[in-house]
Length: 279
Image 1 (cartoon, helix red, strand yellow):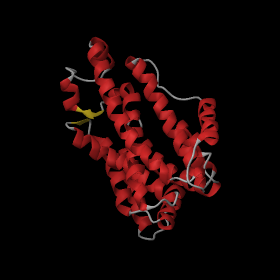
Image 2 (cartoon, helix red, strand yellow):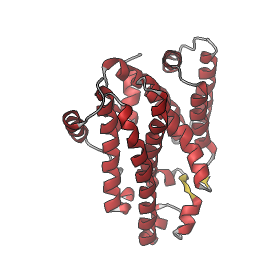
Image 3 (cartoon, helix red, strand yellow):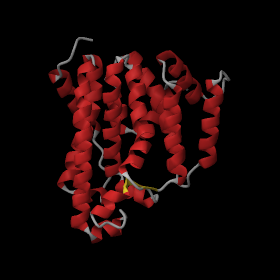
Image 4 (tube, one colour):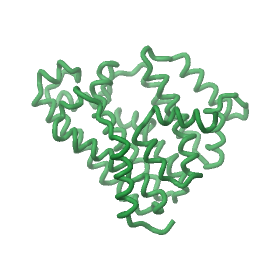
């Protein structure tokens, strides 16, 4: 299972991350597959319709037992715990991640940006820390790695407005909706106030762009072998942001996803053009 099923979980969960990760050196790529098989499995439980609360809580308990040395027999968990040990993940990162996933079982709105950022810390920033550990980066790079995860998560929030609203979730600060005179982000609510909705989305895109710009300062820490896949994923998310900026209401018509050729062409440009310290 440890290759084919891990890869299948990762592939189903993220076209951009999965295809971009193919450009890592093989040892790093294999570890990234293990990481994303774990995080996607947890995420799938809470995003299922109906949500699989019992399955998620069992998964969390199995992980905690495996962390104490028990062999669980769940290869997604066991290989992840081995990766944690080998790459010196802070166990607190994993707890923060699982806390945010558990929040998706019962929390539907976030009152302030502080509350939204607390959720993002567990759902995305700590994944950036784990990726930095897998790549063997120096500690100075971790802040930027977390910030890149944060920026990418925010684009996912914007891209998935329609999907999340159908699940009853709004990850954006309620203070931002109130500022723009929006009562919610359902399709009917947004179409009824299209101008206000567009202004709201552009404000969210500005927040993403600010985090993204700060995160890119950390690219200087990456060897070329890691910069190409990371920059490729980052560029694809910027492309997603650009498409939404041109027509914010597109989020109610389609779920914006890059084609594999676009991802591979972006990677090819990065292979040809990136400058970094030697691998």
